[in-house]
Image (tube, rainbow, N blue to C red; front, side, top):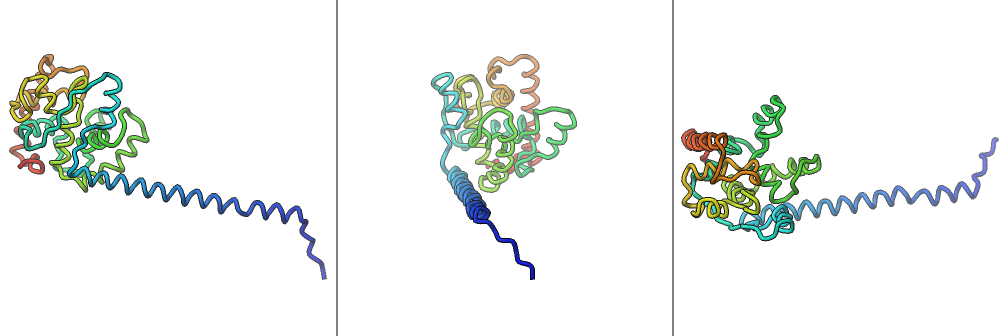
Length: 245
């Protein structure tokens, strides 16, 4: 009967030392999964908390404060914002705000068809970016935005989303939120904005650092006039129902 070749002590020792490596790898993976789960729960808790706690400062505000110095920021509840300002922001930035769950697929398809990057981002996505993430265009940020937006839509009401949007959006160099913008450009509180004043503020949202609501060029004045019409349209056709009242 043939004898099995003897296993050398060196080979045994090699296997003995190599065996624990997979266990160490699994341990690191479990640890990483544990911390990822904790981070996700903490973020969910923050999203829930922000249903009643106002995000007075955002990462972008902090960065701008470090860059240019003191900011003009003044939180105001939705009940103290002129209803026409709410409608103007939606008409300008996301006319189907009440109809989608965070992503406007029709707007995304249209932007892709036109080869445009502007116009596909909803108010919900902008709020997620402004409150939780960082500025700039990158795939990691877009991926995080895509994951968080449906969660925020599920937890917050549409009115709360719009309220936070109008309080954290940049509306001029160092000017954040509609109350600060209304006072700075028109000398009135946000509750007293006229339809045209509201439309002028909404018209600068895509590029607030280089636009002045009180001194718009002809093309943006026409844009503001279109926003006034759009705000009236979404009131009549029901596309403002989710945040009115």
